[in-house]
Amino acid sequence: MPRVSAILITRDEASNIEAALTSVAWADERLVVDCGSADATVALARAAGARVAHRDWTTYAEQKTHAGALAEHDWLFSLDADERVTPDLAGSIRRALASEPAVGGFRVARVNHYLGRAIRCTDWYPDWQIRLYDRRRARWKPVAVHESVVVDGPAGTLEGELTHFAYRDLSHHLRKIDHYTTLAAASLREREARVGAARLAAVPAATFLRNYLLRRGFTAGTPGFIVSAMNSYYVFLKLAKLWALERR
Image (cartoon, rainbow, N blue to C red; front, side, top):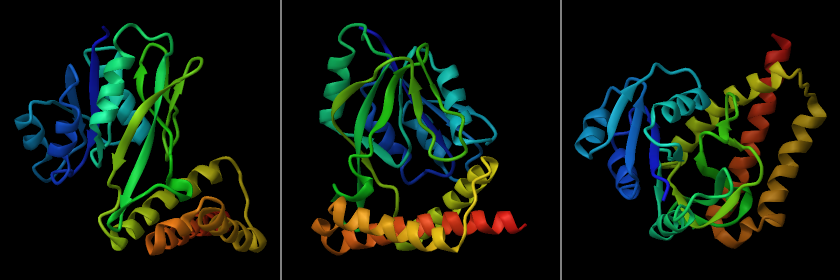
């Protein structure tokens, strides 16, 4: 049975780190790569039994690549501090690694908990993520935002869900949108993407309709409407920042 290292990257995650590490207690190793937390993240991680290393921040993909290189085992499970592995998912991982897998990685459905409920609609679900992977046959795509694992060949699928607590409240959600849209606009600018008034108007509107109607956001009540509107706002702000970069 292949051994597996659970890897996490952190900065000021004292409110999350214990629960995240507990959810991967089944792993043969738990490794935290911190980039200079000012709170108790490092102390709590060590108290929970994790090995802790430091790396100055560069990008999400580079931090996770470094964590994978430090791990003791070739099979890795990458977990963000605001995520939790459910018991069903943990059981699926154990079954997948009961013998050496034929594939280099496995995708898992991620469900976001937001405004008091699990959101299983809109663009947020099933939000497939490759998180269990063999570092000899997979790697993190070197992008500034929305990093993901690329596997050599096909990927398998795990049963169960990865629980995600991305946003504490609406204000926290808006702050994250501001941060990530800055990164996304810069990435688009590097690819020489362009935007005008027509695209600024049409793409966010289409995003809302896709989320609320086609992806059935209306089935989640008011939270579904808010998620659809926030996803539309994310697209608008990303494109508006791209326009501002072009002007600059």
